[in-house]
Length: 108
Image 1 (cartoon, rainbow, N blue to C red):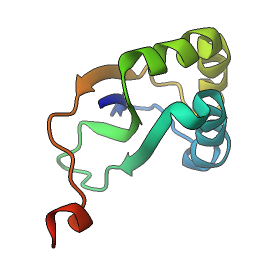
Image 2 (tube, helix red, strand yellow):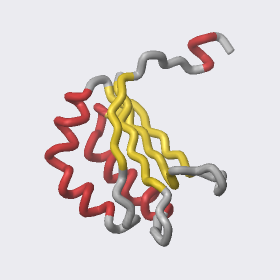
Image 3 (tube, helix red, strand yellow):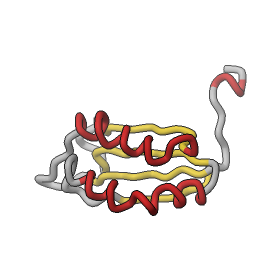
């Protein structure tokens, strides 16, 4: 499984419209990836003194091909939509998940 992490760094005098992001952009992204998207998380950082990012989103896929095959045809549309919710250039990271457990899987 892979995780696509999209982070929006803290920048002075930048803006981020969380309502638009959660209610418009995230559903748009979910529609682009459809059933190849295995999970999604959105984190909004709360510690004003120690945060380096404002918002971090993570998208989970079985493999990188599932991500790229859906993202590349929609990249222009998603990028254009991003200007509706922020002026921050995101940082994208692709990583392989080495361990994934839920409390139900490990008996907690």
